[in-house]
Every structure is written in C-alpha cells, then in structure tokens.
Image 1 (tube, rainbow, N blue to C red):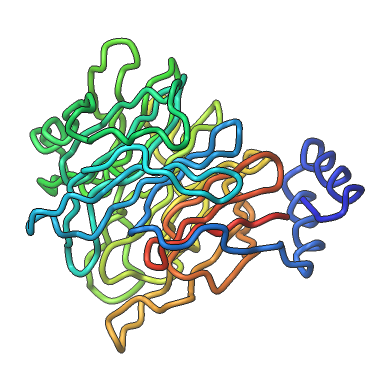
Image 2 (image 1 turned 45 degrees about the vertical axis):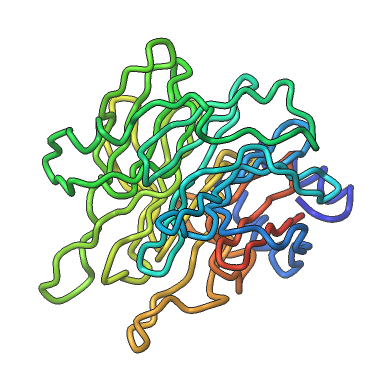
Length: 345
C-alpha cells in the first residue's frame, strides 16, 4: 500500500504473512508518508452509498434535495466512470428532510449483475439489472423498479428493545448468498434469504453504555456491515449524547452472538475490509457540546484491528461511506460536500 512499486509489493507480501501486531507495526512505520488524496467528483446531491464494479465504475446513491413534500422527487442512482463523468441511471426516488439532513436513498450493493438499493424512508429494497446499461442510456424511473417491502416487517417485529422505527441503511452478502441488512433505527440486523426472499431477524445490536453519570446508554445506530467469511463486523454511530471514543465495532458469529471487536470510535459511518481482512473505517465527526453540532473537517479514515486503531487520514468533512477498489485505492463519499474523494496508498 505505498506509492513505490517495491514498497507496495513488500507491503502486500507482509500483509498476507505477518501476524496482526506485525502488520500494525508496518502501518505505524509507513504512516508518516500520507496517502495521496484528491476529490474526483463534485456536485453530487447528498450522496450516501457507493459501490465499485470490476471496471472501477462507481455506482452512487444520491438522496436529492429533500423536497418530496413539495412535489420534487429527485433522489437518484448515478454512475461515475473512471474518467470522472457522471450519468444518471435511475431518477425519481423520494427525498425528504429530517432535522436538517436529507434522507431517502441509503446504501447499495452489486451482486450478479444486479444493483440492490436501500431506501430507508420507504423501507424498500429496490432491484435493478445493470447488465445491459451503458453510460448515456436514458435513465429509468424509480416507480418502474421492482422492490421488496422490508420496513413493514421490521416495524411489525416485536424486539426486546423496540424503537418502533425502521431505517434500513446498509447491507452485505453473507452465508448462502443471503443479504444481511443493518437497520439504523431498529438497531438490528435483518437477514434476507437469497432463494425465497424471506426476512428474519439475525441479531439485535446492543446499546453502548454511557461513560459516566447516570445517563442511559446511547443507542448503537449500526451503519456499516461486512462479512469476512467467518463473522460479521458492524460499525456504529452512537446516538445522543454521542459519547466520544465509545462507539464499538461489534462482531457477530454465524449464530448471531455478539461481542466487541474494537472500540474507541465516536461516529463510524461505514467500514470495508482491507487486504488483510481487518476493517477500514470512516468516522463522520465529533460532537461539540457547546454548539450542539457536529464539527466540520473532523472525520477520519482509520485502520482497525483487535489491538489498536490507526488513523491514516484526518480532517475529512463528514464522510458517510467508503469503498475499496483493488489493493490500495479507497473511495470516500462526503454527503455534505457532495464529493467523492479518491485515496491511494
């Protein structure tokens, strides 16, 4: 993961052979050389999710303007080519505003030539075949897509700690090709059977104990989920009062049993697996108790393991999602800035 070929090859070899402690000694050693980082796309409308295909094309969900109550449904899925050109793929998704933030489309995933797209407000899992789509084709309309109603199942389910809400936010492919979706309002992981589409609750994501006083624990608010072949890792963005350095990455085994993989985060919004199968995490910001707002340019890109967290890029402005392409390239989405940042190690 370095900018010189010899260092990259050596690093890649060590990642595959070194133990965890050795790996992070390597990370610490190369950390003073910052990664190359630049904005490759600007002008997106409240982007949230990102998925890369094998041609390094980026499929993006844009939440839109938040004006569906005024008759404007401008959420969309867009395609970004490696040359940086943006093409609309599907238009007309509903888009709302909640506490000043635009909400609607969330994350997406590409599987066997189909995009599966989550819409949190509607509680829908949309499906789109992209095998014949070419940049410049006439965009489809959201109303014409097939979808499955996930939100109703979640709202009707009687959780032990029930919020009576749903916001299906992110998903991954797990055993048997099933989807595993994190719901950031119900604080749960929902399993969708790949063959039948049947939904079930795989696990509940526990609250985060508060660090002091008699205040209640913060809701976990799961945001990202990955499967490494043996277990699921789930990032969290703890709810109010947003205790700093208390947000864990939870680990779930194949039976849904939960433990803490690592903690020390404040507002993790997404994670991917690195080349060594350790999580690479983006953190949104830190909460300012004086202004009651999240601070700008306070996000991070972090390499994590059971032993430690290593920040490798700081001063990010409200990053919401991350995608890895190849061995050494990461794409980071900023919802507030409407940008995609390319980070190369």
